[in-house]
Image (cartoon, rainbow, N blue to C red; front, side, top):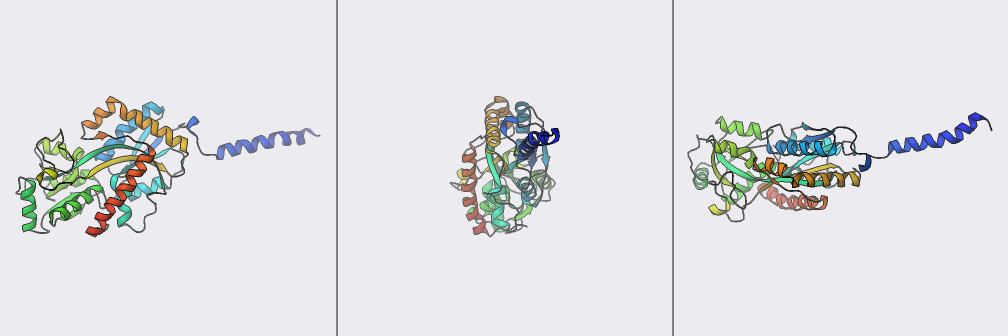
Length: 328
């Protein structure tokens, strides 16, 4: 046998195995070997961005690779979701999932380029926070009841801002209108920061947003806190009553944030990410950082996160249909 034929018989199978190994998806044993991108569907400054950056810092330390936060706002969070859904399923592109992205948006947009249950692999819940209703000084009310009375006297004349159509903030506002029999004008923005700025500037009357965003404005006297849509009052705003205690029992809207990756991501990478998230959420440093922003750490298993998505998808779907909410 010639040396050339011998080399072919020995080397070609080895080369084929090398090529096959290169084509296989990344495994947790050698992941990560390069920086990771964490996609956030809102501009900088909102609760989602805050949660992402707190966990990105923690993951950078534990994984030994830089986790870079990239803000991709637009289309009611659909742009970011589509980007992650179509990204390589290798664990290097993470999705910060706000409540409304997979539970509300699919009910109001018909041509989404992702499926809330098939396009992603849930990794873990990250954190939760309450939703607050606040007014600027131009609105002549001192309480939620006065707001309701004014809104009923002037239907459609008062306005409220949200971080975008189809978000949990938008839904919280519409749910409030259903429960109180009032009519307010919804003014959506591309994120919480511009939404609250519009209220501070007097262009919009009311702010409906997370405790993370509104607590500093209320504490600083720039906005008047009227109610919080949580089971209990917040330690950050102890004088702001819950909607339930003001005569609307059962009124509760929780804004949560989770982590997901593209659907075909190897299970061992999903499990590794879940372990790292749970470890970070258990640390006092992460808990303290979240708490100062009105957030509570809320880690989970991938299965529990998937169950939360399905439960809220069904729950908020009923609200969307009842209110005839459409993407605007």
